[in-house]
Amino acid sequence: MITRFELKNIALVDYAEIDFTRGVNILSGETGSGKSVILDSINFVLGAKADKTMIRYGTDECFASVTFELEKNHPVHEILKDLGIDEDVLIIARKYSLDGKGVIKANGLSLTVNMLKKITSRLVDVHGQSEHFSLLKEEEQLAVIDNYDALTVSSVKEQVLPLLSELVGVCAEIRKLGGNESERAIRSDILKFQINEIESANLSENEEEELLKRSAFIKNAEKIVAGLNAAYRCLSEENAALDGVNNAESNISPVTSFDDEIEKLYSRLDSAAIELSDISDSIKEKLDNFDFDENEAEKVEERLDLIKKLKKKYGKTIAEVLKYKDDAVEEYDRISRFDELGKELTEKKDALRSKIHKLFVKLHDTRVKAANEFSKNIMSELKELGMPKAYFSVKFSDIPSAEDMNECPTADGLDAVEFMFSANLGEPEKPLAKIVSGGEISRFMLAVRTQTAKAQSIPTFIFDEIDSGISGEIANVVAKKFAKIALDKQILAITHLPQIACMADNSLLIKKIEENGKTKTVVINLPEKERIREITRLVGGSMESKAAVEHAAEMIRRAEEYKKSL
Image (cartoon, rainbow, N blue to C red; front, side, top):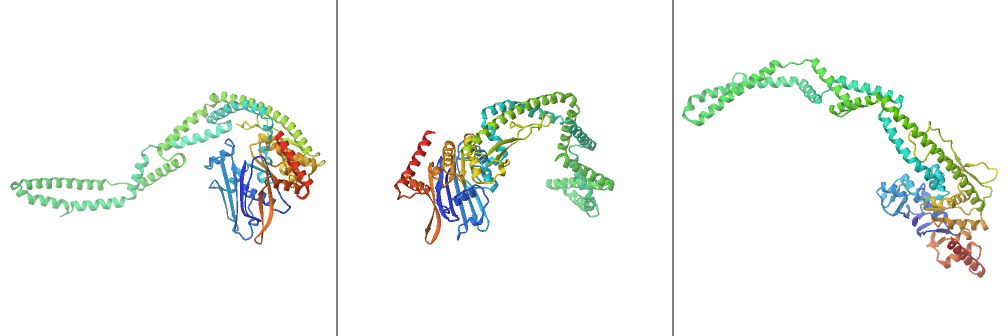
């Protein structure tokens, strides 16, 4: 539920903090005092479109924040956890400036408008504002019918769930075998082509590395030959390295007998001469045998291109390409043996789908029965709310046959529903989403909420224009329905009717005042005495009239007694 609302620099509001409580929170005030500003501000922080005109004159930006106290098991926690929020208190804050820039935060984390709406639509229904009007959504309408007869619907769904789980497994096994006949034929051709393409390449795992080395050798052939020739010349030409070593050896030979160290130097020169001669011969042999042609170069590059093509299609390495081929061979074998392996699975799948479809028909019949009862109760509620000619029904789409059913449906079944409504005799029914917001839709939603409040997970309902066109006894009915709904939900409502205002658990007065030469709107939590004053004003009396004050006090007393009786 909403525990606190804060706004700053919105329309005539300089700054205001509003504390909301459980039960019925009533906002009242003179016409033009700014009641609509409060609701617009709430809608703004819940995700409604921002507008520069809402920024208070003389300021650069507006701000609003709302604090939610969340139940531990509320579905919104799943969304919040994905955002990294795991708390029982949620504070959403939104700023908007004259330059059109805005900031949205949830417990300090930045949000987009879409993310904001996703969260707040599960926490608040603002009747008359489609952004937070959950029952305009068909999936929510189906949930209302299911919750209306939750015991029976759950019983059917519990029978479906194990069958669906088994069907998912069977479908997965069939997909491993290639799917239906057409899919298998297509997949078989693809696999056959892929297998042949890889096998015909006759790859080996180390081949690419060897080809890359050979390619580099061929591309640098001239540089290699030039280098070898230069090295050979350095070793073998007249007066080159080999001659120098031989000459050194000849010069040192006569004196080796005079010193052991000289003898060792001679031996090293002799070894060097042998090694240099061998190196020179090896270079000469390499040069004499140096041989490649353009055809080899082309073949190497073609082979590398083929490997590159196969890697692009089947794996990052040759090993992965060969693994892909082995897997393809295994899959091709399974598909080829489908008649042997798949017949039993297909028969099992068809049998499961038939059982599931029968249960979905049973679920449909259960929903139709619940919807008919729900519709009658809604029209009875509407009659009490001063709409005796209103008509409401639940329209079901035709459910598909077992053959046309999705391959693996969900436990929600095959139904699609739409709430249809007509406010007046002779007017055709229209989808609920087509109804213009206002007093009629607010009263309709009040009727729905009276029937479904306990089953709905949304904790806060905001009613605007709920008292449009009603008075007297109907106003008393509305007030009592508020009290019943508020046993399980929080209500925020704007009203000018004393019958509704006196049912408040928390009374808030919206008032326009002048201060320092400026007009501004303030919000006041009314204590008991001031609450009597406001009810007196709403009944058209004044505090100078003892009878009017006593009448207001009596209305509050009766309202409190009614709430205690629930």
